[in-house]
Image 1: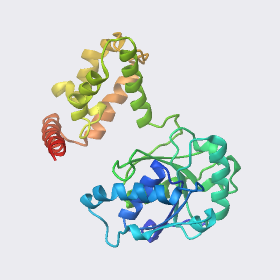
Image 2: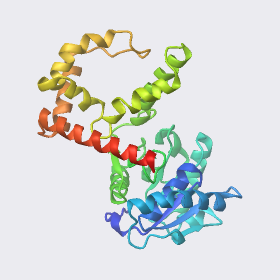
Image 3: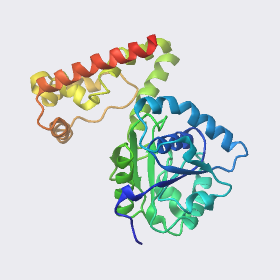
Length: 317
Protein backbone atom coordinates (compact mmCIF):
# COMPACT_ATOMS: atom_id res chain seq x y z
CA UNK A 1 0.00 0.00 0.00
CA UNK A 2 1.35 3.48 -0.81
CA UNK A 3 1.84 5.85 2.06
CA UNK A 4 2.15 9.59 2.44
CA UNK A 5 5.47 10.57 3.97
CA UNK A 6 4.87 14.33 4.22
CA UNK A 7 2.11 14.89 6.78
CA UNK A 8 2.37 18.64 6.18
CA UNK A 9 0.75 18.02 2.79
CA UNK A 10 -2.56 17.17 4.47
CA UNK A 11 -5.03 20.05 4.21
CA UNK A 12 -8.35 18.25 4.67
CA UNK A 13 -9.40 16.11 7.62
CA UNK A 14 -12.52 13.98 7.89
CA UNK A 15 -14.19 13.64 11.29
CA UNK A 16 -16.74 10.84 11.53
CA UNK A 17 -18.95 11.27 14.56
CA UNK A 18 -20.05 14.66 15.91
CA UNK A 19 -20.48 14.05 19.61
CA UNK A 20 -18.41 15.58 22.40
CA UNK A 21 -15.14 13.94 21.30
CA UNK A 22 -15.76 14.18 17.56
CA UNK A 23 -16.84 17.79 17.90
CA UNK A 24 -13.76 18.55 19.96
CA UNK A 25 -11.58 17.09 17.21
CA UNK A 26 -13.42 19.20 14.64
CA UNK A 27 -12.75 22.35 16.67
CA UNK A 28 -9.07 21.44 17.05
CA UNK A 29 -8.51 20.78 13.36
CA UNK A 30 -10.35 23.95 12.36
CA UNK A 31 -8.21 25.98 14.73
CA UNK A 32 -5.11 24.50 13.12
CA UNK A 33 -6.23 25.81 9.74
CA UNK A 34 -7.58 22.62 8.19
CA UNK A 35 -10.61 22.16 6.03
CA UNK A 36 -12.82 19.75 7.97
CA UNK A 37 -15.44 17.45 6.48
CA UNK A 38 -17.69 16.01 9.17
CA UNK A 39 -20.24 13.23 8.99
CA UNK A 40 -22.71 11.99 11.58
CA UNK A 41 -25.99 10.25 10.73
CA UNK A 42 -27.90 11.86 13.59
CA UNK A 43 -30.55 14.31 12.29
CA UNK A 44 -29.38 17.08 14.66
CA UNK A 45 -25.66 16.52 14.00
CA UNK A 46 -24.99 19.81 12.19
CA UNK A 47 -26.57 21.98 14.89
CA UNK A 48 -24.93 20.05 17.72
CA UNK A 49 -21.55 20.27 16.03
CA UNK A 50 -21.91 24.01 15.46
CA UNK A 51 -22.65 24.51 19.15
CA UNK A 52 -19.58 22.50 20.18
CA UNK A 53 -17.31 24.46 17.85
CA UNK A 54 -18.82 27.80 18.88
CA UNK A 55 -18.30 26.96 22.56
CA UNK A 56 -14.67 25.95 21.94
CA UNK A 57 -13.73 28.86 19.69
CA UNK A 58 -13.08 31.53 22.38
CA UNK A 59 -10.55 29.26 24.11
CA UNK A 60 -8.93 28.36 20.80
CA UNK A 61 -8.77 32.02 19.82
CA UNK A 62 -7.07 32.80 23.14
CA UNK A 63 -4.53 30.05 22.50
CA UNK A 64 -3.86 31.39 19.02
CA UNK A 65 -5.38 30.34 15.72
CA UNK A 66 -3.34 29.11 12.78
CA UNK A 67 -3.19 31.20 9.64
CA UNK A 68 -6.40 30.73 7.68
CA UNK A 69 -8.24 29.11 10.60
CA UNK A 70 -11.98 29.65 10.38
CA UNK A 71 -15.20 28.01 11.44
CA UNK A 72 -16.28 28.52 7.84
CA UNK A 73 -13.86 25.75 6.85
CA UNK A 74 -16.28 23.18 8.27
CA UNK A 75 -18.63 21.26 6.01
CA UNK A 76 -21.12 18.73 7.37
CA UNK A 77 -21.67 16.18 4.62
CA UNK A 78 -24.77 14.21 3.79
CA UNK A 79 -22.90 10.92 3.33
CA UNK A 80 -19.87 9.18 4.76
CA UNK A 81 -18.21 8.95 1.36
CA UNK A 82 -18.44 12.71 0.86
CA UNK A 83 -16.55 13.25 4.11
CA UNK A 84 -13.74 10.72 3.76
CA UNK A 85 -13.25 10.76 -0.02
CA UNK A 86 -11.24 14.02 -0.18
CA UNK A 87 -9.56 13.57 3.22
CA UNK A 88 -5.85 13.27 3.94
CA UNK A 89 -6.52 11.94 7.45
CA UNK A 90 -9.62 10.40 9.03
CA UNK A 91 -10.59 10.61 12.70
CA UNK A 92 -13.46 8.33 13.74
CA UNK A 93 -15.27 9.18 16.99
CA UNK A 94 -18.44 7.09 16.93
CA UNK A 95 -20.14 5.74 20.09
CA UNK A 96 -18.34 3.02 22.05
CA UNK A 97 -20.15 -0.02 20.68
CA UNK A 98 -17.90 -2.73 19.29
CA UNK A 99 -20.16 -3.97 16.52
CA UNK A 100 -20.79 -0.37 15.43
CA UNK A 101 -17.05 0.37 15.40
CA UNK A 102 -16.28 -2.75 13.39
CA UNK A 103 -18.91 -2.01 10.76
CA UNK A 104 -18.18 1.71 10.59
CA UNK A 105 -14.40 1.31 10.25
CA UNK A 106 -14.98 -1.17 7.44
CA UNK A 107 -17.23 1.36 5.68
CA UNK A 108 -14.71 4.15 6.18
CA UNK A 109 -11.93 1.93 4.87
CA UNK A 110 -13.92 1.12 1.73
CA UNK A 111 -14.61 4.81 0.97
CA UNK A 112 -11.25 6.38 1.91
CA UNK A 113 -8.29 6.73 -0.50
CA UNK A 114 -5.87 3.84 -0.03
CA UNK A 115 -2.93 5.96 1.19
CA UNK A 116 -4.85 7.64 4.01
CA UNK A 117 -4.52 6.62 7.66
CA UNK A 118 -7.76 6.02 9.56
CA UNK A 119 -7.67 6.64 13.33
CA UNK A 120 -10.25 5.78 15.97
CA UNK A 121 -10.82 7.86 19.10
CA UNK A 122 -11.91 4.78 21.04
CA UNK A 123 -11.21 4.80 24.75
CA UNK A 124 -12.33 1.25 25.44
CA UNK A 125 -11.50 -1.09 22.56
CA UNK A 126 -8.29 -2.45 21.10
CA UNK A 127 -7.77 -1.88 17.39
CA UNK A 128 -7.33 -5.64 17.02
CA UNK A 129 -10.98 -5.98 18.02
CA UNK A 130 -12.22 -3.24 15.70
CA UNK A 131 -10.30 -3.80 12.47
CA UNK A 132 -11.57 -7.32 11.78
CA UNK A 133 -14.07 -6.38 9.05
CA UNK A 134 -11.91 -3.89 7.14
CA UNK A 135 -10.47 -4.79 3.75
CA UNK A 136 -7.27 -2.81 4.49
CA UNK A 137 -6.84 -3.18 8.27
CA UNK A 138 -3.14 -2.38 8.01
CA UNK A 139 -3.85 1.38 7.98
CA UNK A 140 -6.20 1.43 10.98
CA UNK A 141 -4.84 2.80 14.26
CA UNK A 142 -6.12 4.07 17.58
CA UNK A 143 -5.65 7.80 18.18
CA UNK A 144 -7.05 8.07 21.70
CA UNK A 145 -7.53 11.71 22.79
CA UNK A 146 -8.54 13.27 26.08
CA UNK A 147 -11.55 15.48 26.57
CA UNK A 148 -11.68 18.16 25.36
CA UNK A 149 -9.46 17.26 22.38
CA UNK A 150 -9.07 20.92 21.43
CA UNK A 151 -7.38 21.74 24.76
CA UNK A 152 -5.78 18.56 26.16
CA UNK A 153 -2.68 17.77 24.10
CA UNK A 154 -2.31 14.05 24.83
CA UNK A 155 -3.02 11.44 22.16
CA UNK A 156 -2.17 7.77 22.67
CA UNK A 157 -1.41 6.02 19.38
CA UNK A 158 -1.33 2.24 18.95
CA UNK A 159 -2.05 -0.21 16.18
CA UNK A 160 -3.71 -3.60 16.18
CA UNK A 161 -2.42 -7.02 15.21
CA UNK A 162 -3.10 -6.28 11.53
CA UNK A 163 -1.81 -2.68 11.56
CA UNK A 164 1.41 -1.95 9.68
CA UNK A 165 4.12 0.05 11.51
CA UNK A 166 4.05 2.79 8.86
CA UNK A 167 0.45 3.64 9.75
CA UNK A 168 1.29 4.07 13.43
CA UNK A 169 4.32 6.18 12.56
CA UNK A 170 2.35 8.35 10.16
CA UNK A 171 -0.53 8.86 12.59
CA UNK A 172 1.90 9.87 15.33
CA UNK A 173 3.68 12.25 12.95
CA UNK A 174 0.40 13.83 11.88
CA UNK A 175 -0.78 14.35 15.45
CA UNK A 176 2.52 16.01 16.33
CA UNK A 177 2.17 18.16 13.24
CA UNK A 178 -1.20 19.43 14.53
CA UNK A 179 0.20 20.27 17.96
CA UNK A 180 -0.52 17.12 19.93
CA UNK A 181 1.69 15.45 22.53
CA UNK A 182 1.90 11.83 21.39
CA UNK A 183 2.54 8.59 23.24
CA UNK A 184 3.23 5.84 20.71
CA UNK A 185 2.47 2.58 22.47
CA UNK A 186 4.41 -0.53 21.51
CA UNK A 187 1.58 -2.90 22.49
CA UNK A 188 -2.16 -2.79 22.96
CA UNK A 189 -3.15 -2.32 26.59
CA UNK A 190 -6.74 -2.33 27.85
CA UNK A 191 -7.59 1.24 28.83
CA UNK A 192 -4.32 2.50 27.34
CA UNK A 193 -1.91 4.26 29.73
CA UNK A 194 -3.53 7.44 31.00
CA UNK A 195 -6.97 5.91 31.51
CA UNK A 196 -5.50 3.12 33.63
CA UNK A 197 -3.79 5.68 35.83
CA UNK A 198 -6.97 7.74 36.06
CA UNK A 199 -8.99 4.64 36.86
CA UNK A 200 -6.71 3.62 39.74
CA UNK A 201 -7.19 7.02 41.37
CA UNK A 202 -10.92 7.00 40.61
CA UNK A 203 -11.48 3.55 42.13
CA UNK A 204 -9.68 4.49 45.32
CA UNK A 205 -11.77 7.67 45.54
CA UNK A 206 -14.96 5.64 45.20
CA UNK A 207 -13.78 3.24 47.94
CA UNK A 208 -13.18 6.15 50.32
CA UNK A 209 -16.57 7.72 49.64
CA UNK A 210 -18.39 4.40 49.90
CA UNK A 211 -16.75 3.64 53.24
CA UNK A 212 -17.35 7.11 54.65
CA UNK A 213 -13.61 7.73 54.88
CA UNK A 214 -13.57 10.96 52.89
CA UNK A 215 -16.02 13.32 51.22
CA UNK A 216 -16.05 14.12 47.52
CA UNK A 217 -14.85 17.64 48.30
CA UNK A 218 -11.99 16.34 50.44
CA UNK A 219 -10.88 13.99 47.68
CA UNK A 220 -10.93 16.70 45.03
CA UNK A 221 -9.11 19.14 47.32
CA UNK A 222 -6.51 16.49 48.11
CA UNK A 223 -5.61 16.43 44.42
CA UNK A 224 -6.07 20.05 43.32
CA UNK A 225 -4.18 21.44 46.34
CA UNK A 226 -1.71 18.57 46.58
CA UNK A 227 -0.11 16.31 43.97
CA UNK A 228 -2.15 17.79 41.15
CA UNK A 229 -0.07 20.96 41.34
CA UNK A 230 3.09 18.96 40.64
CA UNK A 231 1.76 16.80 37.83
CA UNK A 232 1.60 19.47 35.08
CA UNK A 233 5.41 19.55 35.12
CA UNK A 234 6.47 16.17 36.61
CA UNK A 235 4.42 12.98 36.42
CA UNK A 236 4.18 10.47 39.28
CA UNK A 237 7.53 8.83 38.50
CA UNK A 238 9.66 11.99 38.51
CA UNK A 239 7.65 13.25 41.49
CA UNK A 240 8.78 10.23 43.53
CA UNK A 241 12.26 10.57 42.03
CA UNK A 242 12.45 13.96 43.75
CA UNK A 243 10.99 12.46 46.95
CA UNK A 244 14.25 10.52 47.25
CA UNK A 245 16.23 13.73 47.61
CA UNK A 246 19.72 13.67 46.19
CA UNK A 247 19.53 9.88 45.99
CA UNK A 248 16.56 10.10 43.59
CA UNK A 249 14.39 7.11 42.74
CA UNK A 250 16.95 4.62 44.03
CA UNK A 251 16.86 6.07 47.53
CA UNK A 252 13.08 6.48 47.44
CA UNK A 253 12.52 2.81 46.57
CA UNK A 254 15.12 1.53 48.99
CA UNK A 255 13.78 3.67 51.83
CA UNK A 256 10.04 3.63 51.17
CA UNK A 257 9.72 0.37 49.21
CA UNK A 258 8.30 -1.57 52.19
CA UNK A 259 5.39 0.91 52.38
CA UNK A 260 4.12 -0.57 49.11
CA UNK A 261 2.76 -3.34 51.31
CA UNK A 262 0.96 -0.90 53.59
CA UNK A 263 -2.86 -1.05 53.30
CA UNK A 264 -3.10 2.39 51.72
CA UNK A 265 -4.94 1.27 48.62
CA UNK A 266 -7.39 -1.43 47.59
CA UNK A 267 -5.17 -2.15 44.57
CA UNK A 268 -2.65 -4.93 44.98
CA UNK A 269 0.93 -3.66 44.99
CA UNK A 270 3.43 -5.30 42.65
CA UNK A 271 6.38 -7.14 44.14
CA UNK A 272 9.29 -4.71 44.36
CA UNK A 273 11.83 -6.94 42.67
CA UNK A 274 15.38 -5.87 41.90
CA UNK A 275 14.43 -5.75 38.22
CA UNK A 276 11.46 -3.44 38.86
CA UNK A 277 13.59 -1.22 41.08
CA UNK A 278 16.30 -0.92 38.44
CA UNK A 279 13.80 -0.20 35.68
CA UNK A 280 12.23 2.60 37.72
CA UNK A 281 15.61 4.12 38.55
CA UNK A 282 16.83 3.92 34.95
CA UNK A 283 13.53 5.28 33.63
CA UNK A 284 13.73 8.34 35.88
CA UNK A 285 17.33 8.95 34.87
CA UNK A 286 16.36 8.71 31.20
CA UNK A 287 13.39 11.05 31.62
CA UNK A 288 15.47 13.54 33.58
CA UNK A 289 17.78 13.68 30.58
CA UNK A 290 20.80 14.87 32.51
CA UNK A 291 18.88 17.41 34.60
CA UNK A 292 20.00 17.35 38.22
CA UNK A 293 17.72 16.87 41.21
CA UNK A 294 18.27 20.53 42.07
CA UNK A 295 17.40 21.58 38.52
CA UNK A 296 14.26 19.46 38.51
CA UNK A 297 13.20 20.88 41.87
CA UNK A 298 13.62 24.43 40.57
CA UNK A 299 11.68 23.56 37.41
CA UNK A 300 8.89 22.01 39.45
CA UNK A 301 8.65 24.95 41.83
CA UNK A 302 8.52 27.52 39.03
CA UNK A 303 5.81 25.54 37.27
CA UNK A 304 3.71 25.05 40.40
CA UNK A 305 3.79 28.80 41.09
CA UNK A 306 2.79 29.50 37.49
CA UNK A 307 -0.07 26.98 37.66
CA UNK A 308 -1.29 28.38 40.98
CA UNK A 309 -1.28 31.93 39.62
CA UNK A 310 -3.00 30.85 36.42
CA UNK A 311 -5.73 28.99 38.30
CA UNK A 312 -6.27 31.89 40.69
CA UNK A 313 -6.51 34.27 37.73
CA UNK A 314 -9.03 32.05 36.00
CA UNK A 315 -11.21 31.86 39.11
CA UNK A 316 -11.12 35.61 39.60
CA UNK A 317 -11.93 36.40 35.95
